Structures are given as structure tokens and as C-alpha cells.
Image (cartoon, rainbow, N blue to C red; front, top):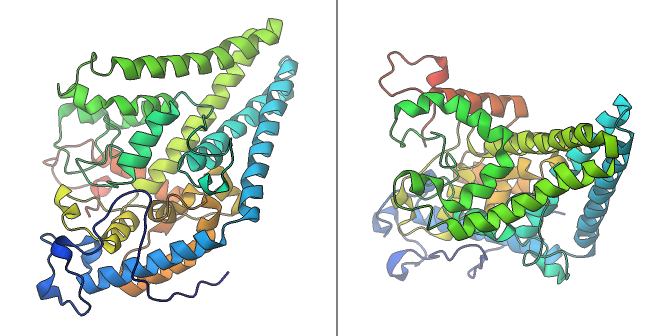
Length: 404
């Protein structure tokens, strides 16, 4: 489909209430930079006129795709759900042959792939409200629960409401470091951050539980702003959900295989580890490679829709790949488009990407994309670089961290 854009004067966005005109309702066409009411620089250095034009063009693209949603999109997500369930059932059946190494491997891998798809392409995207327009009793953000220790209502708050609103604003976006890592030079260095690579490895291995605990605001507990008593109700809900997951994966299904209890429990552990490492890899490659910008809190003062779009784009990165790769990432390999259009079905991001890139070139905004090895290599370099104090002598190659 080819998008034909025309000027728009009305906008709508479901994720965050933005000031479309800046403070004091200043929207008159022909505003000059000198009359720009925004008290702080705009993301990407846009002028007010550029911001308004960019926002209108992005809105037009969004509405064009929304108007085209229909049967094909609904059938797609239903097919993916059906395929995921077949993978899971096939994996669990294969594990009844645990005593045959090929069946153990096939079962563990099939189950791991099912968990990845459930997490990335199904759960993440449905809980973003990408398919709420279907009015389906099951496939909607209000009732969907995923095969994951994280409680869906907790995740929707910390991810949809907080992260997607304050993307890469240091001090607002708690996904910058997940409360344990130093992922910004604006976070003061402490000796404990020498363990940054160790913390990152532990987070990757236990990423599902790291996400589950994200809602309790670990960093505020560390600073004494919250007590364990404050988060006790949340911990109870997390414990109940995690307990059910552990019972299913490490007790119930292994017990069904009788003498294969330990090998099958190990296969389930392997499947969960596959899911954790993959989701960590994809999410960190979408948020922390070289060139991804971070922003001060005052960037949101007088932020217009165009400014918000620019911040989402500059604070994200894409990963190049083919159709199967995009499916396995939940189309978060199009992290730029996802942050710009979080409630549009992710399968449409590949269709939207050329126009977004074209607009970025037109307005002088960087469109950060690269192969998986390149993006993850710079993430690893950043994790290592930020483990070191700012006064650490001459900057070695791994100290090259770009600040937005």
C-alpha cells in the first residue's frame, strides 16, 4: 500500500495526552523560531514549524494504517496464536520421549520458541491494545494474560503507561537501566557499577523475573523512598503469578512424565532461558545501541506531538532482518515504528518503515538501524563503558558512548 499524505489539523493519540500546540495555545502557521514558546530545545533540533509538520505527517501515516485494519490483520494474529499453541503442545508431547536425546532437544527448542512467540508477537502486542479494535472477547488488552511471571496489569502500567510515555528520559523512564544497571552517563557513577556486566548477565538470564519485579520500583526501595511494606501487595500478586508458572513448568508437566521428572524440568528451564536471553537481546538492541539518544527531564516542557514523535524515534533503534526474524522479535526489530505507533498491529511496521525513514531524512532526524551483531556489539560496549568512572584515564575504544 502506498501512503498518500495530506495536511491534517486534528490529531489523536491513545497512549499519552500531548500538548499539540505548545504552551499558551501558540499554533499560528508561519511561527518563526524566534517566537517558539518552548522553553527548552526540541528533540532533534526541530523548529516549531518543523515539529508541527512532522507531527502532522506522522499522524497521517498512523491514521492511514488504522483505517486499513481489517480481516487480514485479525486472521494474522489468530494464525500466530494457533501456531504458537501447536508449538507448545508439540514440545510438551516430544518431552514424553525425554530418554531419547533428539526428542529432548526438539521438545525444549519447540517449547522455547513457543514461549518467545507468546511473549513477543502475541502477549506484548495484544497487551499494547494493538488488536482491541477487533472487539474480540479473548484477544484484547483488558483480559489477555501471558505465559510469563509478570502480572499483565503490572506490565501494562510500567511498560505502556510509563516507558512509552517517557521514552529515554533519564529520571522518568525506568527502563533506562531497569533499576539495576548504569545505562546513562547522567546516572552518577558508584563503585557497585563496576559489576555492570555481571548485573547485565544476571538480568538477561532472569529477564522474565526482572520484568515481573519492575513494577515495585526497585530503585526507589534502594533509595529509601519505598519500603517493602509499600510494595507488599504487589509482591503478593507477583508471587502468585510466578508460583503458578513455576508449578506448571517445574512440577506439573515434569511429573506427568514419571521418571523423566528431572530431565523434563530441565527442558522447561532451558525453554524459559531461551525466551529470557532472546527478549533481553532484542529489547536492549532496540533501546541502547550507539546513536540512541537519551534526554533530560525538561525536554517534555511544551512538548508537541511532533516533538514526541521525534523523541520516540531518536530514542529507539531498529534491527535489520527477514520476515521470520521480525516475527520472532514480535516485530520489535522495528522498535522505531513501535515507539511511534505502539497501538498499531506490529505486523504493519515493516509497511510503515519506509515512510517513517523518508520523513526522518526530510526533517534531519537520525533513523538508527543495523544488523543484530552490530547493534548488540555496541550495547555490550556501552554496558562495559558505563561500568567505569568518568575519571578513568584515557578513553579506550569501549568508552566511546554517544550522548544524545
